[in-house]
Image (tube, rainbow, N blue to C red):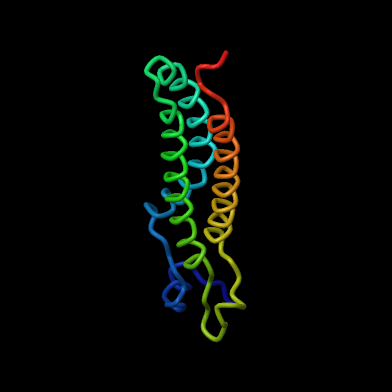
Length: 136
């Protein structure tokens, strides 16, 4: 059995997607974006509640929910693109039979975290829809 270097493996398998370091950083940012955006939405929503009450703008706390959902959707979109490219497509192996690489697994985790964070953000938006921000 002959050991091959990573550079030899990449050149002998031209269909294998090799992400750049910047793409991997953005992938990890999409993993970390989900919980940070959900926590930021919680904080900004409570902060805007007092301002919305004083100005009579009941929709203002929901603005942070919309921004959070758009941010999570963008992170989800980026991670989904990595799921497609994160599968090793060796010669002679159909894409359905390909094994996920480490970046493919990270992309799957990012997708799961982003979807769960979107559910959390939506669950935190329900009281903002139902309750009046000026009610004490």
